[in-house]
Image 1 (cartoon, rainbow, N blue to C red):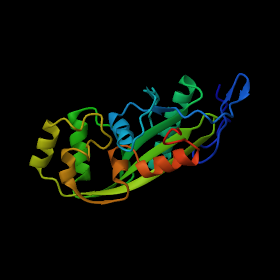
Image 2: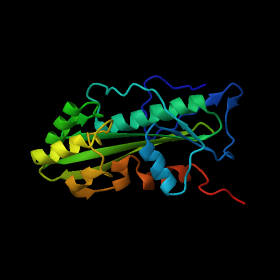
Image 3: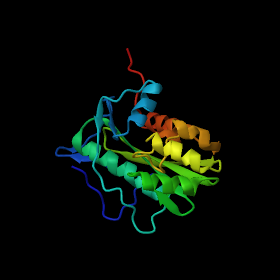
Image 4: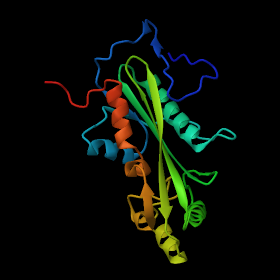
Length: 222
């Protein structure tokens, strides 16, 4: 069962998950559950030799709280996903992750239709925008740690033909900000400052540091 104090801010705070027999303090388990439906995050983990033992698709409300900043939003969503995974699987490390794109003060959610994707691309054209990656890890003892990572991306000025061709490719579907940097949208990127994997879907360096810092063993001991 999860005990959360009402109003407790989610972030770099530690929260204890307890079971019916008290706190779970055994950290000898090395299994990992990925609490995310994104195939891109799974690919990024596999790229560095981490294959989750379980993959869980959490169903959470991703609606921003009024006046919530992109950084707070992405960290909160990543934490909610990890908590949902921890409720489903016990005695495992759980990794939750989320991505939020923001242009100015406007948060660009996942593009669910072509009209939304077009409006996002037109807004991002010739401008800088920020991509926030939220990660949260819950260890087998129930300790929660989370972090938000920011990457700044600058798009070239997009012509109408650029937008039309990209929309025809359908890469925008279910993508935060309406584009996938690992696909054809790579040609739109004039400059990037920060973590590239973060824009793809998971800040690898920060994720590994978080896992290792919580004593997750990357390689099984023989």
